[in-house]
Length: 139
Image (cartoon, rainbow, N blue to C red; front, side):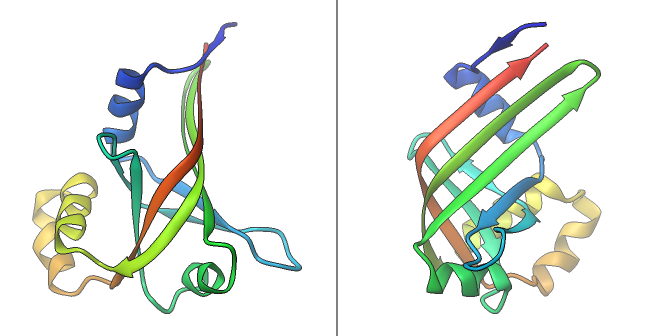
């Protein structure tokens, strides 16, 4: 069994897939609030973006906390596992139309895109600058 870090090209290829990330936000007095999310990775800017409703629990916790978030993206295929874990600081912003369109294109089949775009549940976004990224391929 081998264990190695991914190189930059492997990271970009891995994160371009329509994988669901797990987002963790500190919830004081409890364990972290963890939720599945769609994400976009912008490798040229070294940023991650996540859509969210403005009234979600993750948004409320982010507003009252440190601004730090974690994302974990992973796959398993037989004996091979890959992951990218990211810890960073997020800015909470209005949802950018280009992010919404990119997410819908990445995650939804073409026949479902128009309906989603007509009434998206998200109206805000986290724009996350990583402080640390760890990766691995285990096989």
